[in-house]
Image (cartoon, rainbow, N blue to C red):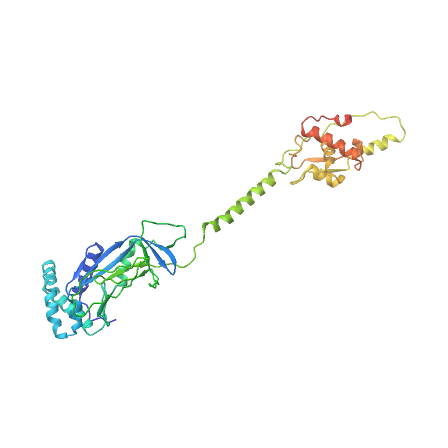
Length: 393
């Protein structure tokens, strides 16, 4: 790509005028070169390597060459350059002079246009900052004029749509109102990619200005003889997107785990720590007159142990520890009836006496003892138990 000379301050002002005109949505005509205008394209479905994508709205930058530009360039006669530039830039120079009241500006632009066209006549690519690159290519059918817009200016045009990106469509997705473009022949690399389709023009025929369209899927790709368009196509991100389900599963597992933890802890037979209840009153029993029995009877009344309720302590657990069977928890309950208001809610720090089974006429290894404990357990569960009821069972 070739550039020409050092651009003056006035030419830089002209470039700013060019871009401002296009950003306002108005076409800009560079007399003797062509007309450039922007066009807002609706969203469409693009098929890339048999994969459908939903492309968001984007800006199409369209260039229409001047009517006699290509036929003039095909002659490759530098002697005609001066007359061509003067003929086609007269109107623009008049407009610039009337707008800016600066003759120097008009003369600089005429020289600028002549330098730009001279590069094309020499078969080189001519680049104008803020405008783009033009290049003339010859083929057997004729000549084609390719145009690539200035990349930095295209990014400014794309800013309203820079938050959008192409989306892979599922096979079941239907958008009957959108048209389909086959873009498998377009190599998409950058967030703002420009491309052009060559327009072949017979050497002896006059060229009409226009823009190009990309062929619709299902039709043959037939280049238009009157249009050349440059579409600004957003990039396709080939990275696979994580489905929201993959993020939802860990959250669901954590939630279920929390519910199970709460459920298990809420059913433990423990309660917040409270003040210990007063010790039960002991009944005075008259001693019998048997010689050796009083001492033996006193030993049977003494507790096996005294346990302090801690976090996680249950009556059934104490029964398993001291008696080897959880069913005898009713004996601990009956022994400590005066300090246990709720068998499932024993206060932390409460001291519980562990009575010997002989005190309640049980051995611990007989089926009748197990059956008797079951009946006592039923009375406790139904809130019908009263001290002394065990003697009636």
